[in-house]
Amino acid sequence: MPRIKFRNTSPTTPFKLEPNQIDGLIKKTADDDPKIQQINVADANIVDRCESCHMGAREPLKITAVAMAAASGQKKPDEYDRAFTSHPEPELLKLHDPEKFACSTCHQGNGRATTSIEKAHGNYEHWLWPLFPRENVEAGCQNCMQRSVPGQR
Image (cartoon, rainbow, N blue to C red; front, side):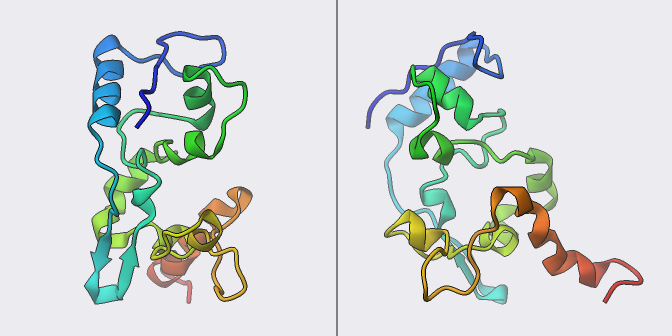
């Protein structure tokens, strides 16, 4: 796996990391053994493998695709930069533990698929629930919240 070089300051990098944080991310990336990461929520019949590609989802640091691209000297983020970003709302992961809810419960897509981005994101003819588009990413909240808010059905 190629080493990722993180720069601590850059006009295009929207965050600043301390040297020990940078070293930690580099070590984690260098030591990574790519394998299928699977969440199994048996009670809800959910198998979710999103974190096999989206490896940075649970990072406590705010990592954006733009920052990842800038750190590796690119002008625009590519699919690898987008895959390693942290969850945009880490506080939500404290309330909605991925081990209990998985990813596709909120974001849709095909959480079991690992053979292509199109299949994993549910963008093919045999999948009825594609990943919510970025502008509607919070639409999945209604799946559960409508049942738990008084006065809602």
